[in-house]
Amino acid sequence: MSSEKNLNYNKTIYASFIGYIVQAIINNFAPLLFLTFQKSYDIALEQITMLVTINFLIQLFVDLLSAKVIDKIGYKPSIIFAHLCCSVGLILMTVLPDLLPNAFAGLLTAVIIYAIGGGIIEVLISPIVESCPTDNKEKAMSLLHSFYCWGHVGVVLISTLFFKLFSIDNWKVLSVIWAIIPLANAFLFSRVPIAPLIANGEKGMSLKELFSKKFFWLMLIMMICAGASEQSVSQWASTFAEQGLGVSKTIGDLAGPMAFAVLMGISRAFYGKYGDKIDLDKFMLFSGILCIISYLCIGLSDSPVISLIACSVCGLSVGIMWPGSFSKASASITHGGTAMFALLALGGDLGCSAGPTIVGMVSSAFNDNLKMGILFAVIFPILLIIGVLLCRNKKIINK
Image (cartoon, rainbow, N blue to C red; front, top):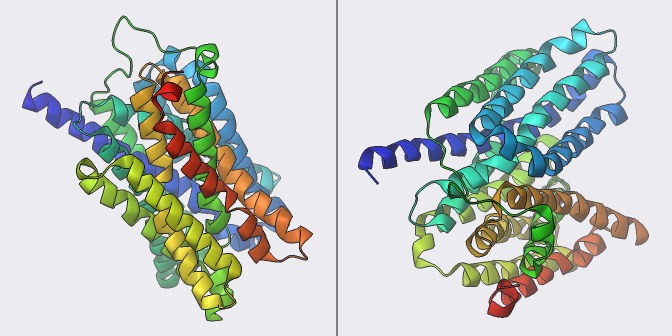
């Protein structure tokens, strides 16, 4: 392959990195404005928090639908459409609540539009990078997923700084500024090459074929455990920060989830840099063991400060789980195609939802003891370690 083509595919990878920043924007910007929405539009907080649930459910539905639809439309039109949805949704969030008789309906419409874009991005970015002619797919995949972490950190830091300098009353200006990024990346994707995930003349596996493979089910369970291991602690990191440091919710959000996201990003970037020198299975096993240790420290320690530190270390430990599982699936199921990536994304999202839910249910059963909920959730990294060990069994890989 010529160096010019390689250079063009590097641009494809850069656009994919930005794509995950876009997803971080649509997932993390609106929650910073919940109290502002409540005050400005006189909407009940219960309704406003539904926006996160709707965002998640729409992305989950898109994950499921993508397995059947995206191959017919094509990767390039789909990824451009996804970015335009994100941009339009962020812009409509600033105008629809004032234009429609019901402000909540306006916010909900905007969220649905950008959630459609976010769901498509989640399904497509990984196979787009996987199809690029790079030497080490695992490195590229891990580095790719680190950009969601950097996007999350950037959204919170830049938004907080903007609100401090220009007042949160000017949030609409910032929303439009954030909308420029997906718009620009849609243009970038229109200019870069996207290689086919499956070679010309060959066909990707059907859903029936995928479901008949034992190894695919193993990968799906690992993705569920990866999402659950990540969110079971991330969801509660702010609470531990407030308790441990005795600070306000704003500072708690920065000290808890931000530290978690930074260390998760560092873990992914580290493997993205040195992955060609590191055995993926060993790195995932080490990360799983570190995750179990951090869960035990959170659940068993009486010191809120130690619990907070353990939350941050948990971010470091879960970094490789999601991209590592993706890489193992794509390396072993070579004709999985878009359907495989869509279903794995669906599994990861289910884990992200199930983890915090189970922690909350167990905590409630023990008189709202959050530590008991976290202790119970240690089952997720344990199952992931078992999955990695089973992956080394060639008989399972071939089934």
